[in-house]
Length: 171
Image (cartoon, rainbow, N blue to C red; front, side):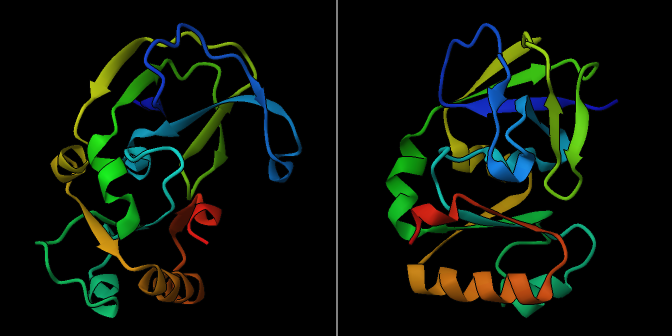
C-alpha cells in the first residue's frame, strides 16, 4: 500500500491547499507529498542544502565515495557542517495523506501531487532528526562546503538516482 507524507516545520496544518509550483512544474497548483521510500530525504530542516543518495541497489556507490563507516546503510545524506546546530534543534511534523487524489510526479524523487485540498490522516512529531534518520538506516554525513561541491560533481556525473535539495542555500 502506497503511503504518502508531507514533512513540515509547521505544527498545526489542518488542511493542505494546493500552492502554485515552480517553473519546472509549469506553475500548476499542487499539494506535494513524498512516498515513504524517500521520506528520509526530507527529515531535515526545510532550507537545509543536501545531497541524498540511495544505496539500496549496490554498495559500489559507498566504495566510490569512500564511505565505509556504517554497515550497509540504505541511503546517505550529505549536509554542510554549518547546518549541524539547526538540524539538532529542528522539530518536524510528519503528516500522512490518503493516496486517493495523488498522482506520481517524479519517480526518482518520490514526489506525488494532488490538485485538491487534502486533510491529513495523522501527524507525528519528530524531535530528533539525526536519530530518526538512524532508525531508517540512513547515514547523515556532515562535510565542509568544499567537499560538498566535490561530492555534488561526482554524483551528477556518475550516478543515476540522487536528489540535490535546496542547493542554492549552500552557495
